[in-house]
Image (tube, rainbow, N blue to C red; front, side):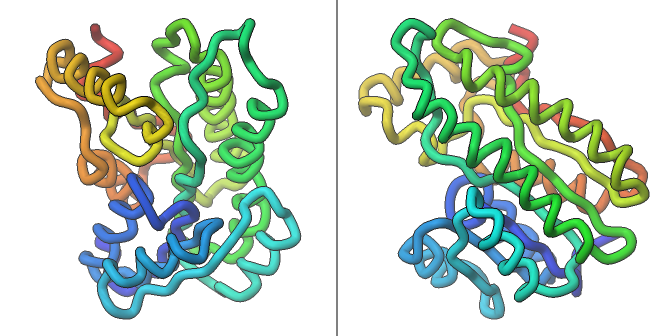
Amino acid sequence: MGLRGQRVVVIGGTAGIGFAVAEAAAREGAEVVVASRRRESVDAALKRLPAGAEGEVLDATDEEAVREFFGRVGAFDHLVYTAGESLLLESLAESDLTRARGFLDTRLWGAYTAVKHGAPAIREGGSVVLTTGTAGRRPMPGTTVAASLCGAMESLTRALALELAPLRVNAVSPGVVRTELWRDLPAQDRDGLFASAAGSLPVGRAGEPEDIAEAYLYLMRGGYTTGSVVVVDGGGVLV
C-alpha cells in the first residue's frame, strides 16, 4: 500500500521529524498539508517541499482553530502529529508548572484535539500516527515531565485505536535525534549529548529525522497495524 494520491496532514510538519515525514510522503506521491504555529516556519517549509504541498498556520492548543483548520482541509487519508516546542528538561524541585502545563498542552492535548476534530474527515483505510518518546520507558533525572507525556501518549494511542476502530491509530517513539528540539541546550551540551549517543548506542550514532520518518510511513501504509508504538531509538532502550 503506497501513499501515491493520498492526502497526508502533518501538524508540526515544518521542521525536524515532522518535516522529514512530509517530505518523504510527498516524494512517494502523497498530497501533503503541513501546519505549524509560525508563519515563517510554514513559508520556509513550503519552499523546501515538492511543488503542490500546502501549508497553514495553526495553534494546536486552540480548539476552535483546530476545528476550523480541518473544516478547510476536507477529506484526507492520514493524520500525523509531531508538534511540540523544545524539550523540557529540568528537575522536579526546579520545575515551572506553568511551563510544564504548556509543554503538555501542545504535545498531549494538542494531539487529542487534532484527533477529535480530524478523525471524522479521514477516509476509509486511513490512519492517525502520533508521537511519543523513549523517556517513558527509560526515564532519567530531569525528565519527569517528558516521561509523563510519553506514558500518556502511549496510553492514548491504545485507547484511540479501540474507540476509533476501524480507523488505525499508532505512535512512533523516537530516541535521541538531531532536531531543533534540542536548541535550548547550550551548544557544548548538545554536541556532548550526540557524541554520548554515538558512543553508547548499538548503531553507533544519533538518529536523523529521516531515520524516524520511515516509521511514520510504515504505519501509514501498514493496514494490519493499530494500537502499536514503534520504537526507533538506535537500540537505546537496550542500553
